[in-house]
Length: 140
Image 1 (tube, rainbow, N blue to C red):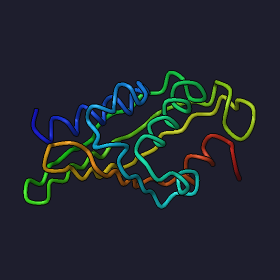
Image 2 (image 1 turned 180 degrees about the horizontal axis):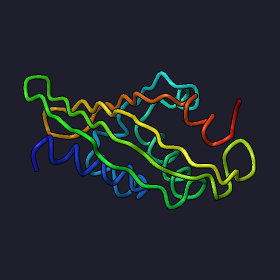
Image 3 (image 1 turned 120 degrees about the vertical axis):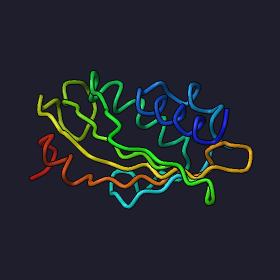
C-alpha cells in the first residue's frame, strides 16, 4: 500500500472508532499528535487520540457518522489532508455532563505526515471544539 492508501485506511479506522488495534499497523510507533483545541491539547500521541476517540465516538456519541468532503496528498511533502464533517448526538454516557440528546455537525481537518515507509508519523487535527461543545449543550 502506498502512503496515501495507508493514510486513508488510518483515517477510516480512526473515525469509525475501531480503536488502536485497527489503526496501529498504519502508524509509525505511537506517532505524534497535536491540536490547538482545548479538549485535545493534552494528547501527544496518535495512540492517545485514537483511544480517546474510540471511547467518545463509540460510547458518548455512539451512532455518529462522518463524511469526507475532500482529500488530497502531496507527494513532495508526503502529507495527506482530509476535510470531513462529523454528525453525532450526545446520547451515551461520558462527556462533561449527562446525555443531552443534542446533535453537533462539525467540520474538521486531519493533516497526516507520512514517513518514508508510508506510515503515519504525525497527525494534526484542526477542529473548532468550542462550536461542538456549544451544539452538544456542554457549554454556553
